Image 1 (tube, rainbow, N blue to C red):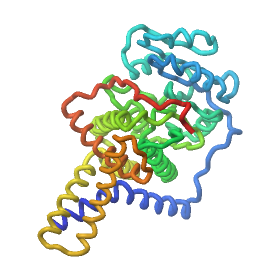
Image 2 (image 1 turned 135 degrees about the vertical axis):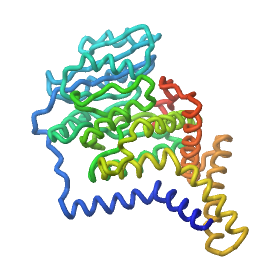
Image 3 (image 1 turned 60 degrees about the horizontal axis):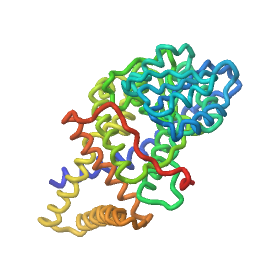
Image 4 (image 1 turned 60 degrees about the vertical axis):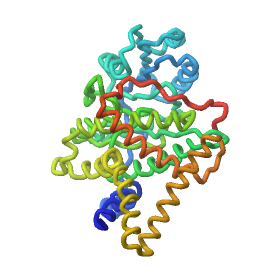
Length: 394
């Protein structure tokens, strides 16, 4: 029982903190042996590029998104912009039509984001394709900073950084911003060691020649598209200086909805990327993939519960101050999360409780996502999460 307890505790620690420590050490060793990775400059001949934005009923924000898109820097004659508004029933298509420099693709049928992207990709002729969401805003140099990496023929995809704009008066979703800061650090190290394991849909790009359509029922299309490129032996680079900013979820309920969908998509992705579970195929990529994604999306939440239960049993049966101390730490952590939940329901804001509360919500979402995927109740179609008002963000 004690062996199982320590094994469970070790996996939980490794998943959320240990991998980061190991990754940092490996990156430092790589720098000592091979030196820092060379990042191509902007003096290289930049490739032709198409920016694709899928937008569904985004009339409240579409003009702001267009204004942001048109101010992006890129060499004249090398950039094409496409908005795909399939199925939109509001004025989104009409608003896009006001801009002749933008190509509008619209059909009245709503077939989902994936099929809309497939339809757009059939007409793309540029060397590089960049995807971004309609409710995110890019920094002016984002496309330049992404495109420069394709001077390296081993690079197959480049992911930008997601930045969460926090509300001036923070609430429990501030944990989302903290989580993304930690994730960004891990992605920087992943990219430097070898490859990022998956790209986020807020801002990512691929070589057109390597793009393959994913199945229409794919839940995490951005993740699957990028990882299938990685399976072909190409690196996915992380470029934190190219970023997409979006507002945090309206509340923890909206964030939970998003996390459950991601968790269900994670299970689907693991089942469809079986080749990456074989360490003999690509040892380093498999190590990164299993450590950074697979453990989080599968056994770790169950091991958290097992470690807690076993800790109680061990203390009850054998005592021991050390096991008692570990149990007290677990009780304090989960108690803080529970208190954060209770205070959040009363709209009382205590910043110190945001992280344990958000951490527990994330792991609950994994359990709910696994259940939803097994039941077959998670649709690939996605109704976007409600976001906070921009007037309150900083």
